[in-house]
Amino acid sequence: MSTRTGRDRDRAPDRSRDRAELIAAIEDAVRDNGGRGQLLHQAIAERFGLNPTDLKCVDLARTEPRLTAGRLAEITGLSTSATTAVLDRMERAGFIERVRDPADRRRVVVVSTGRREQELNTAFGPLKDAMTAVLESYDDEQLALIAGFVRRLNDLLRDLTAQPDDKPLTTPPEAR
Amino acid sequence: MSTRTGRDRDRAPDRSRDRAELIAAIEDAVRDNGGRGQLLHQAIAERFGLNPTDLKCVDLARTEPRLTAGRLAEITGLSTSATTAVLDRMERAGFIERVRDPADRRRVVVVSTGRREQELNTAFGPLKDAMTAVLESYDDEQLALIAGFVRRLNDLLRDLTAQPDDKPLTTPPEAR
DNA sequence: TCGGAAATCTCGATCTATCGAAATACTTTC
DNA sequence: GAAAGTATTTCGATAGATCGAGATTTCCGA
Image (tube, rainbow over all chains, first blue to last red; front, side):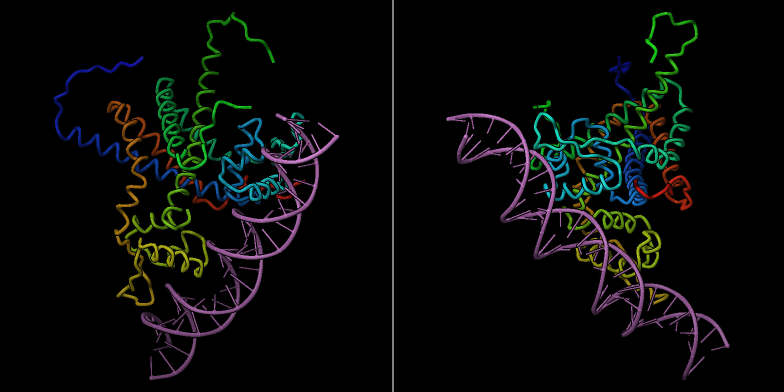
């Protein structure tokens, strides 16, 4: 539940100015985070013989349990042939396997092999450890706040990347 | 796995478990944010006739006041010829201009024209506005907490991308 | 059972980013 | 003032990702 009160606030003007600056600083930092994260991702992808797009697809394969080649093409906006190439690379690198859907044998289901999962975790390990260390320094309530913020950030990024004139990145309620 | 029972002692094991899960969830969400941010950046870069790398360089040119071509090559790790190509694209797109350094006329200083800055802001506008809306919903203390978290995240990302001697990343490259 | 539709793959072509080597323009050193 | 060094660009070549068209396999409705 929220504890905010609808009380009119006669605050000093420099306080609200500080607040605006703080907000702007956070926005800048978040944007900066994006750039740095991209760099890191690119470096890690390179070490696995993939490109950043492929690495993102690996992640998708991990999270979406019944990912098909066609669905992947839909999500990424690539042509089906390009998607085949992406899957080739992911498979060659040992991240995924192609499994024909027994229910519809035209379909190819992308399953994460889990074989190189450990290496990926190791690659992301330093980041994860450092992040855990940062997060451990907060108490439970603060963590909840941070979680809420990050989740909301995530939501709005998802909304923004779901372009109306493009493919529906928003997954419709599982029409199967 | 053991079934969870209701006979929790006065210790609070599931509290610390909740905490660990919360931390893991935040880490996942942050990572997710990175992916989504990348998507957005790519989409925006495309709209400006650039690639994500170029867009990052545009940002660098904005922030670093006396950026030279050589320094840009150093930062990005590209060859000098590739850097020339990057500058060509950035210049053709109207983001920067090449100015010969009067102090050393071999050098080319990259200066942001500011001409398309407005458009860039417009492109990132929806993200910024949505983010501002999210941030406005927090009180000052909460904002300070968020700012601290984001800044610390930034710091560790910078540290990780700066170090070229990430040992765990160099894992056996041969996929079986 | 047959024919059209759907999912994926193969193949050939193209486009782009990158590299290395050599060229150019300028500076510093002797 | 010439030679060596530095910063950037040009040029040719290459590798990689992507696309479109067509082939292949499988599903589904009549």
